[in-house]
Structures are given as structure tokens and as C-alpha cells.
Length: 190
Image: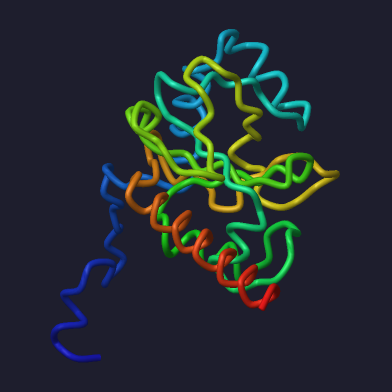
């Protein structure tokens, strides 16, 4: 053992201390959960719905906007054929491109991309609609990150409270999907 090793923290039975300002993943998930619940009309009902494995009715508009994008458009942006739900390739693309939370709903065959609330005022993108302010969104618990019984789940989980996608990134994904779908249609017709 070298001289530097003898003076290293933890050497000679010395206790190591963990800095108090470390935030764990569980802490971030809890913060995201509380943040989302603050947009629910009835926090206790929403919490019970999550504990029962369901979704909570969270009102869009105050804390965040949600852009609904059909699966076909997202799949086209990624280069995946069809209108089916998320694949690993789609999930990786969304995480790398949007850097924020995305919910998938199999009953609507749509992705719901969470972005800043102010995006709803100016959102004008055909085929990718912003959930109107005041409307409810079925939000899964922050721990629902895999498909189960057809319930909505987080394709890209919310990393912490207020962690949202940038509107320009959302628009870029929508535009890429739009161009890809148009190209497919032109190729199929021609």
C-alpha cells in the first residue's frame, strides 16, 4: 500500500461520510409525484388512484401543457413502421430528443409529451394537439414505467419536479414525424 493510500478517507478504520446534499432517484420521484399531485383537484383521491394502480386525473394548464401526438407520427419520426405503441427504439429516441417526460396511452394510441404550460397558448401544429388548459389528463403514477394491462405509463419518466420538455424539441419531433409521414404517403401513392 502506497503512502497516499494510507491517508485516503476510510483508511485505518476512519468512517466515511456521505454529503447531505445528495438527492437520490427515490427523492426525485417523490418530488415529481408531489409536483404532479399539486395539479389535481383532489390530491387524496389522486393519490389513492395511484396506490390502486390506476391513473390520476391531473388538470393541464397550470403547471404543464400536454401535447398529444399519435403513435404513427412518433413512429414515423423514428423510422419505425406502423401505429403500434412504444418500442425500445422509440423510447430511446424520445428520451434522447426530448429530455423530458412522455406518457403513452394505448387506448388512445397516442403519446402525451409534457412541456411548459405557456406552450399551450401558441401551439399550432397540425396532427399534434395540445390538451386544452383546464382539461384532465390521465397521469400514471411516477413508478409506472412499463406497459401493464393497457394502462397509460411513462415511456420517458419524469426525472424530477418541474422537469418538462422544451417546446422547440417537441415541435422538432412533431415536424420530423410529419415530414416522414408525408414522404411515406407520397412514396406509397407514386
